[in-house]
Image 1 (tube, helix red, strand yellow):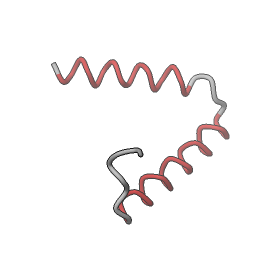
Image 2: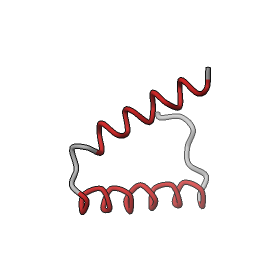
Image 3: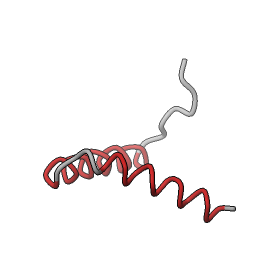
Image 4: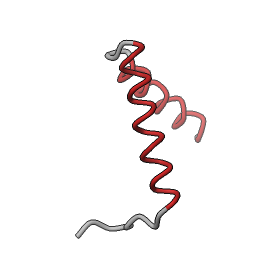
Amino acid sequence: MWKRSVGAQAMKEQFVASALDAKEREQLNTLLRRMVLRTESTHAPTTVA
């Protein structure tokens, strides 16, 4: 079952990425990496008020 879930998510990501050119994908990757690193380095809230 997890293989289907991962495959479905990969298809969604590929669809979204296909709308971006190489420079935009690189920029998106940089921004997402920054967000992940920030989240890992701080205790992000788990709920939204």
